[in-house]
Length: 173
Image 1: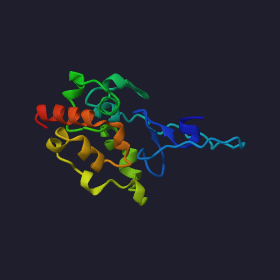
Image 2: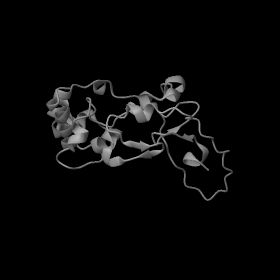
Image 3: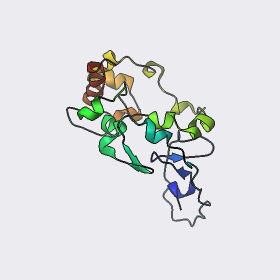
């Protein structure tokens, strides 16, 4: 049926894109035993565009629709629990400490259709907008708890946040 049961279309960077919001969406699931009729599948709309593939600093998008997590900045900054980032990732962080949105930033669908949410619960905490790398590199456990309550960023443990920020600082970012 295509991406997420017809919720959007698959794109070359491995994300799901909707006509209404681009790829800046939260996905969820509903478990039910009720018979549901699926939406009509979306057709592929990336065409010959390769902006996401070309823009990826680590070449993590190895071919259209295939992302190699071992090369992906987002994977390493969010999921990799190692004390050090691989050099190929650290050398390309460009200041990212929590994920990477380069492939989404260059996507024409996002440039054309994305829109900010008006859902208050999805707004960032004001004190976390544009944090300084030096602050994050020295983030204490207590400060982490204060800055990131009820946040998706809690997947990134304090030691990882410090690791990511320090790696960027060491490379002059």
